[in-house]
Image (cartoon, rainbow, N blue to C red; front, top):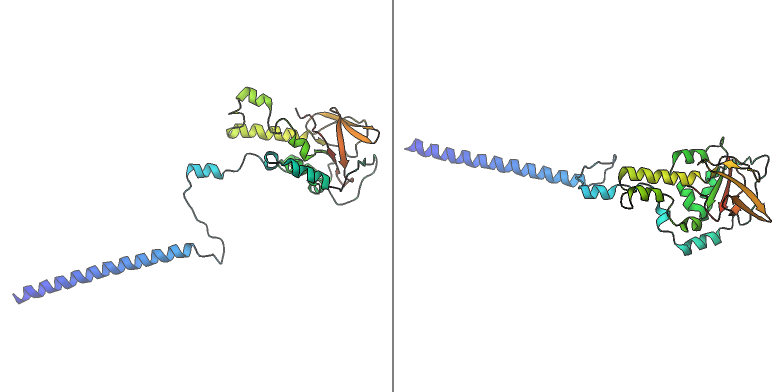
Length: 257
């Protein structure tokens, strides 16, 4: 009888000990998990910490970048444009580049684009395409950039990346939707930019030159005013000649079709 009681007591003690050990294990595990969660949100001293979070399909679609850079094209304020164009006094008068020689300055055409706020819409577009950006940064390739005023681009009946033929063939809803639509828009935008790049500088009066985009243009002078033909587009101003070309600011847009 006595042995039976002792056995029961031992069984009870063993059960209590087992339960205590289980409780301790869970307590340690919970403490460790809490510590890890707290550590995850601490600022990392030695380097960046990478977290992997599940992103729903809607969130993923929202986070995708726009197909092309058009931030200036959608939200241009007319009053802001007018102030920019009035306030830019760096080159108000038309000064034609010399027909011989060149500037020995270290500046390049892309520098001129950045320094002229009233054409920052077009300047931004030139940086969207590697061939264009590369050309304007290359001192071995001379270019006369025919940069439309912000107001000239804003006054277009359609955005530079839109083509009526695309709407005709694919419909308004599908013309620029998805990867194929994005590619079409990119091609149209690149065509617009390249139509305004003349691959010569200096550029002689009356000299007809094929643009990077394939069209042919020349300039003529009527009194003190210079016009780009075809289209009779008035030149608002020009900058000083730099090492790889010049920038002519236009009051209109070259035909890019």
